[in-house]
Amino acid sequence: MEVVSGQGKIRISNDVIMLIAKKSVEEVEGVVSFSGGLPVGIMEFFSKNTATKKGVKIKNEETQVVINLSVVVKYGVIIPEVIKAVQDKVKKSIEAMTDIGVGKVNVFVQDIQL
Image (cartoon, rainbow, N blue to C red; front, side, top):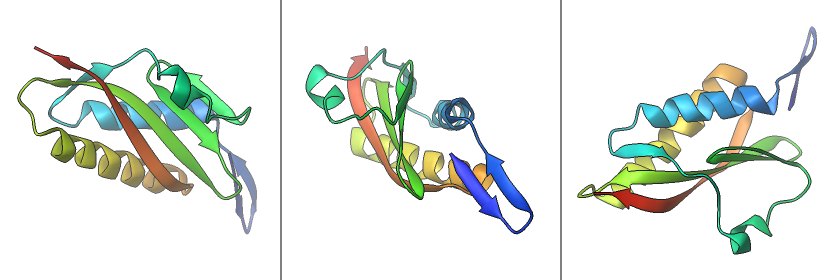
């Protein structure tokens, strides 16, 4: 992704954005880990502009990114509350650290750890 400032261009690797997303999710209580991937039906929505690492996928759009996360949550948590916290934390962290807009943070709960 590229950010243009008055002094020039800044290029930020998708790997950096993925790392920020992963570290942000780790800070949310109730998330156990990242899942290995997304269901095939969901994968069909991703284009060639998608970068992927285990549990995190980034789609570059013109002026922002869309983050897709697959997570495993703890049994007994209120899933919508945990996922909302993940979405907020990831969006705020990426925007604060990179100045890149985050259009959406889609979170797919793949499993529950008993």
